[in-house]
Image (cartoon, rainbow, N blue to C red; front, side, top):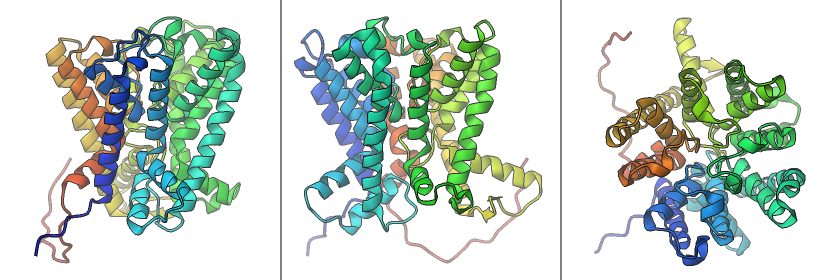
Length: 441
């Protein structure tokens, strides 16, 4: 008898799903209708842009507003939406809409894709994600519309409102402000309170994660009933917004008080995977750039539209360090103990991100002959799926762009997901090798 074909694992489905979306997006962007000059994009530019959009990064090699046609911009926006929500989420939504039943395998894949705690109620959670996303993005567009219509006219203003609302909620960082100045992002709106607040709110809501919003919806103001993950995400997110904002406030000493507050908060919020900027980042000193690199690597929260190693990973490592300082056997938070398996995963993820970020930065420095800090900023932005840049992306060679493409892909799919997709699960065993003491530190 012939061997039965091996079914794809959940990790493999996620990995291939994102790859398929990128290739399809690249094909569409190569069509003549996708570019403003009617010639179509080169394969290299199309693949880079499709990867950046699907992986909700925001790094670009061509200015989005001036290089791409409205069709090309719509393709990019669709890739952002699919990448932000997750390829699997969209596949499940299409399956449900077509009247087909969701099997056990699809539920398992969906659970892994959105980092859900359990498989039960996964279809209902998918519906909640889609409905919530639509409501938030439409609300964001409506709030942005007055400012953009005033600036660009009714037709273009409405399109810009939808584009930037979706891009912000999905933590993508793509913008259409190149009509003012190429690669300028939102610097022309740095003093616009409405635009700053709406974009920041969309970034935070998208980056907190759907599981957290579902928990808040279920338990409302009864904070004690929140899951430990919800409490940890909210506390860590608040810490990672307020503390860096103080650092940036000191950095922006030359601005007036209103501009200092808006720019400080915006740069603190956007750095963790959103990719917009309202301040010329090339004017930052090495301290400000270093803070941004750390924030980009941390990223958003699990089950969100954001990338990075995740707030919970960062928090677990910090909590474990403090438990060691206090000579405690276990790591705990909010009256709950954190499993050792979670700690092992956290350490593995941090190690992986640091290796990818540093290795990529060193290689690009060697290839391009650029300063190490500038190249590390670029690789942190790529692997954290952020999209911020110090202006070197468009001028990079093909070799450096390939490195950034790989980093963006790994950053969005997830390093562990990619490894699990390539490794066949071994048989579990209860046996254990003898332990021996090892001195560290």
